[in-house]
Image (cartoon, rainbow, N blue to C red; front, side, top):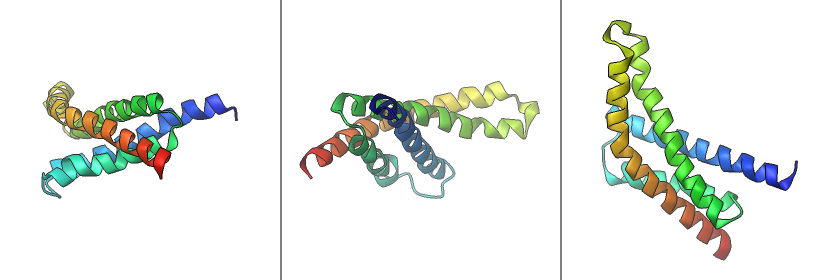
Length: 129
């Protein structure tokens, strides 16, 4: 596999995995299985985003990967929040979609900062460790 193709593939797959991990953490918070404390809302997403900076070869694409992880989180979390509409179609999927987007926007800001911070920490670890 060519080096550029590998970099593009890693730039897509690592943020997707991080977004999936972050959406599962926030789904546990939404379902009240874990408390809504800073450990779950910020620190665990930062730790989940560290591999983005460790794996992606340059700092610029690593930061892009941190932002992409937030976009993937947004998509996965909205899918998680709108899934009950398929079990109760008489309530309307639009209502679930609007509430899912409204709830996800606040969490999206946390995930942007956590993803960028995790990518920077991973880049620093890669360079100096």
